[in-house]
Amino acid sequence: MSIERRFERIAAHSHIRGLGIRNGRAEFAADGMVGQVKAREAAYIVVQMIKKGKLAGRAILLAGPPGTGKTALAVAIAKELGKDVPFITLSGSEIYSTEIKKTEVLMRAIRRAIGVRIKDIREVIEGEVKKMEIKMEPHPYNPYQQIPKQIRITLATTSEERSFTAGTEIALSFLQQGIREGDVIMIDRETGRVVKLGRSKEAPREYDIEEETYVERPSGPIIKEREFIYVLSLHDLDVRRARGGTSIMSLFFGTEREEITNEIRKDVDEMVKNWIEEGRAEIIPGVLFIDEVHMLDVEAFAFLNRALESEMAPIIVFASNRGITRIRGTDISAPHGIPIDLLDRLLIINTEPYNEEEIREIIRIRLKEERIELDEKSFNKLVEIAVNNSLRYALMLLGPIKELAEIKGKSKPDLEDIIEASNLFTDYKRSAETVKKYEHLFLP
Ligand SMILES: Nc1ncnc2c1ncn2[C@@H]1O[C@H](COP(=O)(O)OP(=O)(O)OP(=O)(O)O)[C@@H](O)[C@H]1O
Ligand SMILES: [Mg+2]
Image (tube, rainbow, N blue to C red; front, top):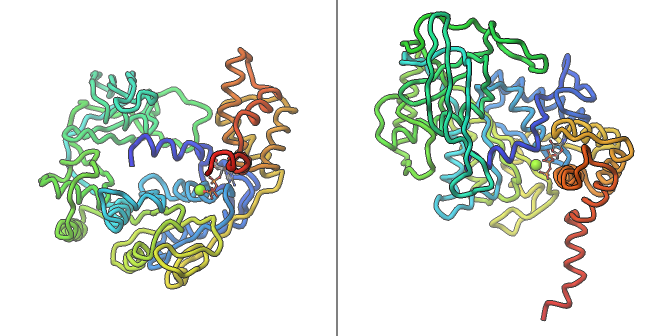
């Protein structure tokens, strides 16, 4: 999956910072999460079990109606696990690719979700970011999307200041990690891998940034040899091995095209085990989130069942908004379209429809996140739309609402814009009914 699509997929959940649990209990609204108290408390227990490595051989299922926060919960779980714990998402339908076998797609996802923390002496560029400038340009295949073309940074230590220019990959890395002026960073010279070490104690403090680690401005030269600790996934190592690279780090932003054989994977596993014995590496089992689980078929389920039993396995979190449905590739119906032998290994967490108070709060948070201001009447209308149609639909309208106000030159959207947006864009129920209504005119 492309980097751009990953961005897009998490954008709807950008307000979620964690599960919002205090002393083991879910607060009504905290860390961007609202209501869904039981599910959040259950998810919190899951996080504790994952951290202690006590979930081996089992998996999680988040089950509930559309728009009840299953994906939001998965994102919150990832946030709680911390940034070093890999969190990989895959939608059930993504296994059907024309180029890669289904089980190969799953295998890669599984190995992406297993991290290896490696300690190594590297030549690095390290310093506090004094200045950074990113030049954006339209994506070559998708001109509507802006991607970074070049980054120019000035780094400083207590004794030196230097400027560097780098290309798209490093610039992207800066953007993805949200690196800003005043952060202390380290770049591996050979590969361009960027690590944010924390916020410089010398940098001006910003009030709305939570959970920053503050570090000293580095001393000495900017370019130096240094112990570099970084996390790669087993998949990263597989790709590197497939390309015939020799150094641990001769890898960067892999494509999907390499042929990775079982031999290669066995070699990599052996190599990692050796590093662990030498005290140079450590395994970090991560999470593989598989959304739309009913899209998987028997073959995929059989594969996952086996994977759960293997020595190195990530935690798998499934999500489903279906009830009893056919298991793909069979004539058998089962809860969520999942075979019984897998169901037996699942800890299931249900999500439930929201009440009005919860919907109100979620919309309030999303408005703030998208920097849209509404007067009370307009806000109430939006809540009404969410209650009568769906939360997802109301949230989807935020974009058009903002656009309509802008076209009319207003400083903020009002009731008229909300009504207009909901007339211009229908929800899927209305839309399907409309098509059905005219069907007889078009079908022979
Ligand atoms: N409890 C919650 N707190 C805050 N935001 C939420 C909560 N539940 C859902 N949201 C937000 O509402 C929107 C819809 O929720 P989400 O996509 O997580 O639903 P879902 O259960 O995954 O739906 P589907 O079955 O269609 O995949 C998202 O923008 C999500 O971030
Ligand atoms: Mg979802």
